[in-house]
Image 1 (tube, rainbow, N blue to C red):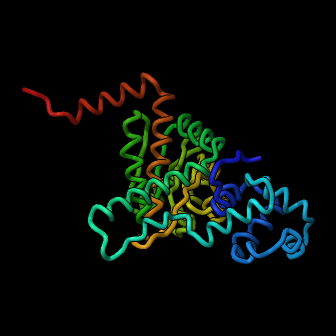
Image 2 (cartoon, one colour; image 1 turned 120 degrees about the horizontal axis):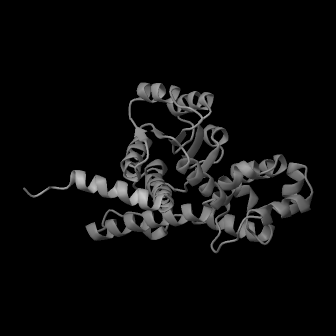
Image 3 (tube, rainbow, N blue to C red; image 1 turned 135 degrees about the horizontal axis):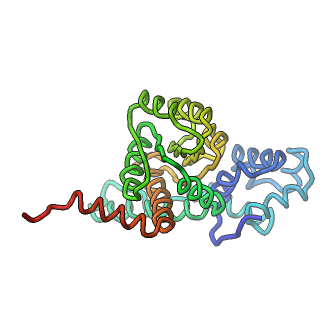
Length: 286
């Protein structure tokens, strides 16, 4: 059973744990994700009848995603539908001062990070750290806005002393992917998890046998289904920016967590590589 947490978010929990669900659990999950408004006005008997499953099956599903029962799940779901996950005070009004707008942006970012931490799967995080730490080389792949995140990941991980690489050109990404081996690790970053270019590159990498890690906002996506290790972010649309833009702060933070874990693993090697980099870019006195 998944760990219960305070202020559990129903939809976020379902999305993040979707790949681990059984066939029946996925059937229930799909029903909730596609009909959230209907669920909050339905009974456990009504939902079970609609799905053709036993009441006890629905009850066990609610427990599996961290709730005491169906009613507790409904209450959490209702709070998400009636009052969105985003802080109501974050909505930007025309008369807001510069400071007020800045405050709402900061609060929104903090909320995104907190929600992502809530759905972070410790087992998959450990698998990702193990895969990266044991790899001969690490490739970061992303397209568009996620490509910027991939370059930032490269900028971080080059400090570890490991062989890392990233590029924004999709053709070079494909060429790079074709040269990977089972000793390598590829990290794919995509908010939607369904970007055509990224999925094409992923298919190429899978042919090489390299370990694959995916960072995405959607558990029900081609990317999360195909990678060896899926990691998820949680972000919501606001009055002033899209869900995809909001997810970047969560992606950056998740990559930070991977980077720090790798540096802790590498101990002296990591610190030595970091010092070499600092010496190389620092201004030396003549």
